[in-house]
Length: 417
Image (tube, rainbow, N blue to C red; front, side):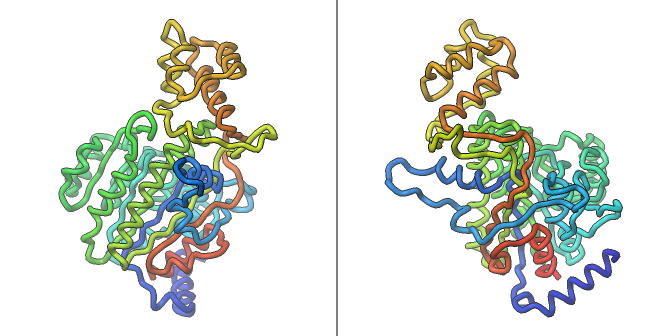
């Protein structure tokens, strides 16, 4: 079935389903916590929990939680998805192969929710903590047979850009940025420039920073500004927001980095939630594309997970190791940089590492933090379990219960149609 026939069928189905005709959000905010399976949202709840009370406080992920979603790619690729196949499912409602950017298993283009929005005269935008050309944002806006073709993806985004693009732009050439400027885009490259933006189109090529070392809450800042830029759209807008580096922290098995990324993404979700409250004609729908790292909140048969010290870690293990490897006393640097005193087992682990090799020392510091907090990991890759779904605003109840990730796209498409 070609795309036009598919959309016609979807439109007919939409008109026949109760609830869709009466519920037409003007704006749709789609939020994806890349790699953010249930262990991450549970871990975040305890990470930010107040130690002044005897109860565990709920988070934005708890109060907006409506269900769960399965994430597997096309059956040719088995059970475990990559970000491209999952993002394509969330953007088009179609399962595909791992690595595919909004194309089907025959490598034919699939119509995305952003293309439908544009055809209806709506504005579109993205705010991510990865490159703008990365798998998730790319799958919502362009078509390519392989996610690693980021230079080709950059060219496609130059030819058919979103109205607002916030993220790292390292794969865009100066000529492409000049083309966007000629099309009326404000082109900026620093977070401090966000506040000075005028209404209208923006291309923000931000530094590729992380939430613990460089720019805390930068996705929260970008989300607030992206909503501000798009708010005046007469026909409404569709905005994609991704907490990209939750996934990167999971791949690195770095619990300190992961929880600080969760804090930034949680702040972005809260900013979107506030926008919905102030603009009740808006739908916020969020999920994850998959989970990453096989994160477990306990390890080695010990019934214990203690994340409180993670709040006090102000440098990533990689940053600590970089300083320590050049110091006269690396162990003293590590002891000063971590908010807890190393016990004999942890000291032995550090001392048995090559103290002049940054990568090895980074891994040792991560393991020390894991031992201290009781954090476990099973893989450096993705895992196949279900992920959370959260929603609020117009039509939020349509996403309750258990869904497949393609169902999320199908429902958004029906709302748009």
